[in-house]
Image 1 (cartoon, one colour):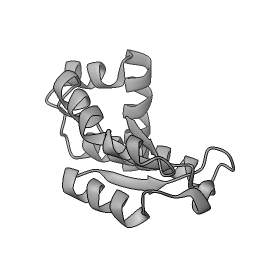
Image 2 (image 1 turned 180 degrees about the vertical axis):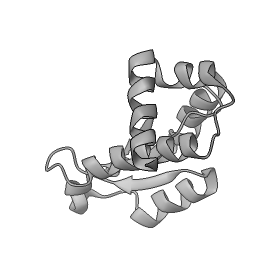
Image 3 (image 1 turned 135 degrees about the vertical axis):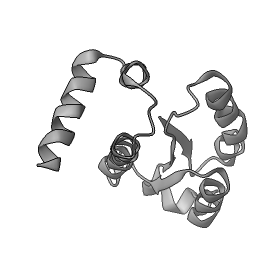
Length: 123
């Protein structure tokens, strides 16, 4: 899951605790969360420093990236971090069983593709 705040609006940053608590209260305990400071193209209007975003991510045990959807900078990095984190959970056997993997990935087809890719990489 990407948890996104607007770097040019402090109020969105201040809402992170609420949003993260909702994810942790209502989501799977193994849900992967990446913190994204969006609108990095609005540097002159910045209200939340990159250091603040990184500190919050570190305190909450999250990966962090700043991006701009407007100019596409680091958007791919946010998704790559998410996919890499999920992949690492798979190869470290952090899922208890096949049903848990199915529930995490949402469909048998997607799960099967991921497992096939792991098998190919292990060869």
